[in-house]
Length: 294
Image 1 (cartoon, rainbow, N blue to C red):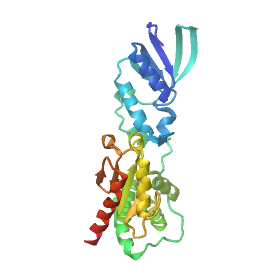
Image 2 (spheres, helix red, strand yellow):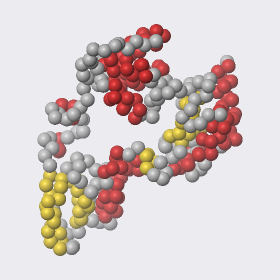
Image 3 (cartoon, rainbow, N blue to C red):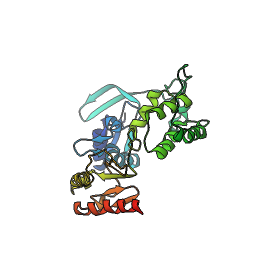
Image 4 (cartoon, rainbow, N blue to C red):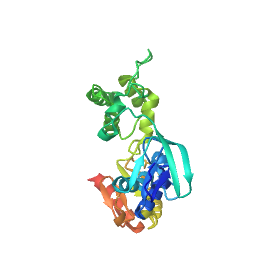
């Protein structure tokens, strides 16, 4: 590795290795962060939320990623394995084997073009549909959904914009609509369903006109946001992820709205309610109900 006295190698670029590298570098050591995968982050980069607070995993990891990238005393050596360790404690020498990347790392801008054009990467592509019964949509939505699909089908990577517009139009994905999108684009239905169920902004069930999002992130949670969620449920007589019979309200929880200084926070559509108290909720709901009568 290096004969420089005072240098240290941290093996593993997970959240623990990242924090260890930062602590050591801040103490004046030169740090080499060695990771076998192409990038650091480890298992946490694959998680959505973390126990026990259900905080966003990326919110926890992102500040460390930025700090590591900026720190003058941290050098990340990724896509590398340790082949040999020689020497004695206090004076060790590591021999690394860095895997081929087939790109010039110094010139990489992270544009992703190499991934799109990689001849061996298993990227999901549209496939010819087998002969089978055609999916027919209800007449009242057929024309609009057809227009959305036709608008994007000639573009590269049309699936996400199609799903976004259909979701905005219908507010959820009926089963026959997903089958229709698969039929018209050639993408496997299983692949479309993975996307439709991954993003919290999409829903497979009908949702209300007003989406109530109660933040359960750490800052809001410690200030009683869980009680707000219960109060919304009591007032509307529905549970979390349920919709009122009149299709006006749907209650959901989120892990961070980005308004920690106003905690506890809830949003209804585009309206943000900061420093919210349970006693305010009946009046807020009444306001939206009266708005619908106008």
